[in-house]
Image (cartoon, one colour):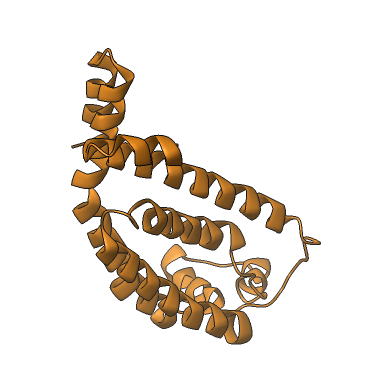
Length: 178
């Protein structure tokens, strides 16, 4: 079920239990799609990051497509590039959320997420040592943001697991978790 279909069903329901059951059934039915999404990232996009050229080389190659390049643009294309912490941490948090939410109902998804993180450890270590250079230091300001997001992920785990338990008629367990 699509996200809008799920919300449309939830809005049309009167009882809170029916809303939570609809959410639990929607989560369970979308496990295959998200498992395939994580498989795509783990087996295609993570190895592709190792083969993708350095941003300086890519900028140099694209300068021939753009046409005439000034001296400053050529200098900037070869300047040291920094690891994109915002993009990489967001993707890692998304994979963590998928693994945590589906840990109760789809254990294969957790295994696929583990394969993704094993591949990303290799790629991140390689890129941080050999490809990118540190342009700036945040003074540890990223850690509180990531910690807050991890707490939100764990809270969503409790909510989604209780919704899935409601679909299985496990009332006491769902109330205990929620």
